[in-house]
Image 1 (tube, rainbow, N blue to C red):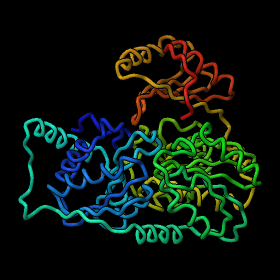
Image 2 (cartoon, rainbow, N blue to C red):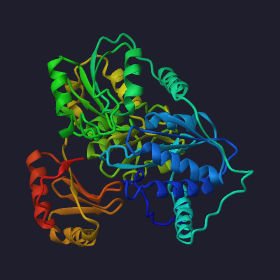
Image 3 (cartoon, rainbow, N blue to C red):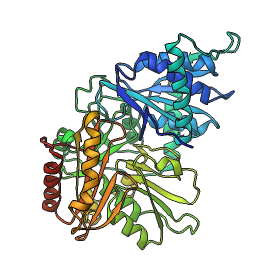
Image 4 (cartoon, one colour):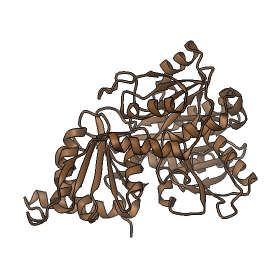
Length: 464
């Protein structure tokens, strides 16, 4: 039986430094070490966050005190540590990052054989972690004999980044590129990989926020429309063909078209679902999270694919199903032909290949049939119960307007006019999120306005 997680959210463990502290990190290292027993070394890396080094040292101490060797490879994007765990059989990869969260936060992601570790792994770690926290309060620890402790050592990242880069270059071929790209790597570790790879393909690359800086001076780490104002401007000013932005650890991306318009992540998913190779009758499954648009499901059905809906952040539970062709969550795309991990660079390259030097705005216009509004609002922990009660009352309050309800992830309301509303609490931050889809921006704004009144939300919220 899988226990409800106390520390794990929808994408690893994240939090502020007072919660994800060196003490917590050491205990987590012990818990993970007790969960993962192997003669093969584990690999650990981090992004540029200010607390990464101390958390890494603490984790490595805890891990090696009860388990085997752990190798610190320094700074790299999350997909590189995913690739390492994939290229070496039965290898654990640990990434210290809070992804798109603020610079004051940090956290951990875990990978095994390329895929992000699932709920069974998380449940075991949770149980061992609780044991360690209880023991700590009694000043007792379970350690191996001094003869059997693992080794903590450091290796330069250069060869691993080179291997990851070579892997990408083998996996996708793009020829005759004369397009200009503006690349925003958010003052973080994607700068170590993405500019070099795009240049290897022959793109003219102009970078911004290319300096590694733990304070994220260029922009917030999450690549939302609001946060990419400067990138939009640069695309227009430099007459570029496309703008590309990563999040802090490089497993997510956003695109700006040649007119300086932000491209919604659901539009990109619709595009890819339309361009998948459906010729193999044994690969007809597509995993979509509950916040994907109705158009994605319609395109998949038109091509004879079976669509399966998963909770946000839980597509990774299905990566070993060989019949799956594509797994998609807005901002997080997984292509099984490439690997079992979410990668922020491979989908960009695949999109550039498929777009074939045509204007991005024209290519994507058919895939934005529905209008999308996604907003997040801060919610204190003590207010969650009250908000949940109000959420549960919405089906009755709007009964005459609703044709169907889904509880796969939070609550999703299907309106009789084909509008859709998903409401859920974030799995990584203290926020409630609204995902609204309809045939007009006005309808979306009206639904959001109603929700804000019902839930007594006084701020404008932020894009998500």
